[in-house]
Amino acid sequence: MNKRISAFLIFAMAAILLVGCSGNGAKEDERKIALQNTLEAYKAGNLENLEQYMIEQEGMEASSMEDTFTDMTEQKKAEEALAYLFQHLSYKIGDVTEEGENSAVIQAEIEQADLSEATTSAIGELLLQSMSLAFSDQTEEEINAEIEELFISKFKAAVDNNQDNLVTKKVNVQMKKVDGEWKVAADEAFLDAVTGGMSSAITEFAEGFDMDENLEVE
Image 1 (tube, rainbow, N blue to C red):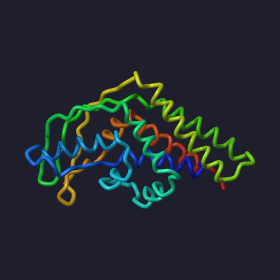
Image 2: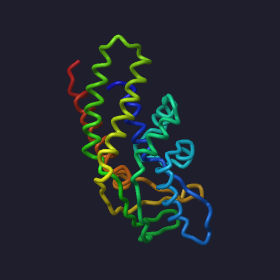
Image 3: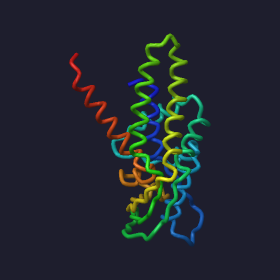
Image 4: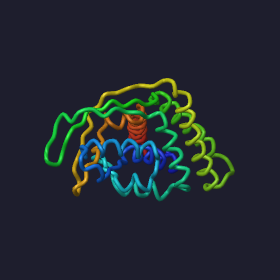
């Protein structure tokens, strides 16, 4: 897979892991405030603020995510793409159903454009076009720039084409207290809800791609 595509896929997965939190509102439930700020941070697409409050999913290497952010040619462009992805995100925060000293579970309803099938289709089209570019007489820098533009345009189109195709999911959001601050410990159910199925679509594609690579005979 082209390094630029890999970087963007990791970026997409990394981006949907980023969370926000707040120390204000002492009279309110700090756990619910943290969840609300997390969801609002996704919608805003501010990478600098989001990265500050990131909780890594188990198995995700911090170095890979750091390299991905460093590899982005324009942070502003990445932030605009994220905000575009989450523009249809809405939510209702419910009750705290489980609570401990440093952990809790909050019920939530999350609505988002259904992007599962559109994501699979977009990745497939992106791969075909990137393969075509690989055989062109363009420089590596030109190819990377064009693939980046293709990636953004494909996923913006996926959002536009599904803006009226919304899906609501009920999730039990895992919360963790880290260094005195409540944060979302994003699991697969939460990630899939906030991304409208994009998370699972990317994961399934990546697993299938790795499997194909492993089957190649040297």
